[in-house]
Image (spheres, rainbow, N blue to C red):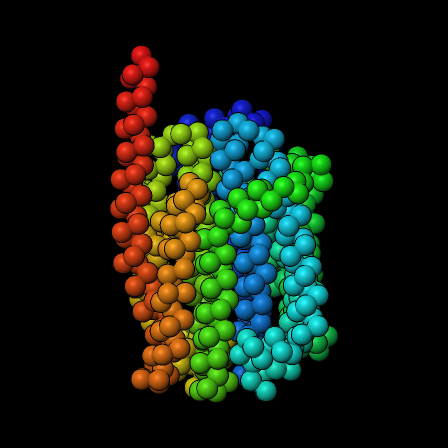
Length: 462
């Protein structure tokens, strides 16, 4: 990894053929997302060996991690996307101001989560859906996750900054090293040191701390075109308003995902610990599969944001069409394989609990059907957010978990029982796809109109 000048970086982002550029930037983001998913699955796998209630605890505390991720991704994508457009417009001073101010905001919010989450930890676990048998495991797990929340949050922010400016390979290094370390430490802390679910959380917190140190060192050593410094931190409300507004689609997506997980756990809990454990396992597998799509989309985002800032609308249009096509093909292939092998995948986690296996297989197969539609949905949302259309991006982000999933999972089980819990997410994804298709077509038409207007303006100048 060698540093390139700002001029070389600008030329790469604006002149490299978009297909090659999207793939080039997507590879490290896909690897980062896969590693993150793998060590999340490792936690689920190792903790599941402690019993069904312990496996359920992972699903409960996943909501806490989703809140941490929501803070980090909202600020990281909000400030990062604005900074990327500023870099595209060659306004480096403003780019640095947004990046440094976002880092400061993330530190403050994550410290507040640590303080209040620790004080009210039992109430928080019950609110997230923990049964009395799951509560002791969830409490042990959540305590250390909350302790590590500031470094987790700031790591997410820095990783998103690297992605936003098209240097995701640096973020990949930090995330990958931390992820591999997490997988190594899990069995040591859980079994060798007999720390149980607390050991899994300690391993995660330590690994995230290592990732944080690596990412921060890269920023301070000048690997990024963005500078993190106290002198760039602004206390003007407009900066925070802009970054939160730009990151609002992510907040809606991540925040509602956390609320949706709570709703899912509460509804599943009425069918016993096995249902909670099965949902946790199936969701972790699905998220691992979706990581391919998410990583590809995050490789596309800096291409869209940078070139939109440079007013190269044809490149944004071509990148959007290419990414949506290749991501749809990829998710169809992955979903077919997972559907066929759903049972052995669930059995990797709870081989001796037939009820968990039965519920998990139905849930996973239902989600595989919906995975085939996520290409258009994800690319459309990321395209709107990257090009500053936060209002429409937020509305679309709210559809999946907010407008559709939460109402479905809270009502459908009253009519068809456990099956309603198992298929709720798939139904929500299908409905979201239909909405996304409209936004996708409209967005491409608008890019064409901008390109045509720009051509006409250039002709008039001549």
